[in-house]
Amino acid sequence: MGNEIISVIIPSGRPERVAVTVHSLLAQNLQRQMYEIIVVTPDCDALPKDLPAEVRVISSGRLFPPGRMRNIGAREARGGYLCFLDDDCQAPENLLEHMAYILERREHVGAVGCRVVASDATFWNRCADQALFTSYQARKAGVTAGLGSAALAVRREAFAAVGGFDKELMASEDWDFSLKLRERGWQCWFAPEIEVRHDHRRGSFRKILHAAWQYGRTSGLAVQLRHGDAISWVARLMVAAARKRIYWLLMLPYSGFLTLVWLFETRPVKMLPCLPVLFLARLSYQCGVFKSLLEEN
Image (cartoon, rainbow, N blue to C red; front, top):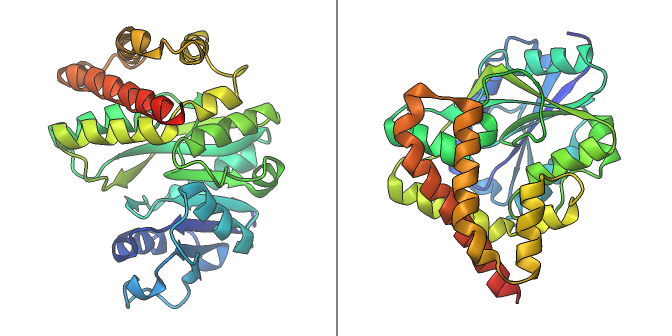
């Protein structure tokens, strides 16, 4: 890779867990002067006492939505590349080197994402990966419609061009960020050869459905309404149904449609037992969206 500095930004609402993330970054196969580590947290006193001195800690004052936490770190970063990593993730030793390599070799790529999978590959954790973190599970490299922000590298110029993450969105801020990049002419690249481990702790049927419902409730249709021209025809149909207050009529068929799309695109023979869980999680997400629509009305 070249001489561009990489700033790794960890938004941490769980400061007691961030040590594993930091130590995985200290084991990168890059010289330490090639990257910096920034932890953004509302509670600096709760951070592990044994964090290395070179880790920069920035107080956010209080816990903000994830996009705003990342923006706070980006303002303090000095790198030409910004890498965002969640505080429940563990980076492989080639994460920074490989993401920087892609950004250097592909000048039209504004952001690079990768696979993010459960730390412990139990049945329920694999179901959670597919049901809750679908955008991280692809096996094919190339340009994609959207990237997740749990492990994401971005050119600083691309980040600045779209104004960073939306500081108000409680969820789906990464999808919104990806769509803004595409609207500005940048490509989003998915690199499945990189795999980050994720200690998401949602490895049970109840936790999967609850998380899906919560994601739907906090996401609502904010991103779809904002980027109507960039979403699929079926997503636009759901927006139209919400405007006519008949969203509830389409929740079941829409959940089934999304499950079939996943099955067609992924064709995961080993993951077929997760299919009912995936469908129910999709339906639970739509119930959460419907709840948000009722609250708005």
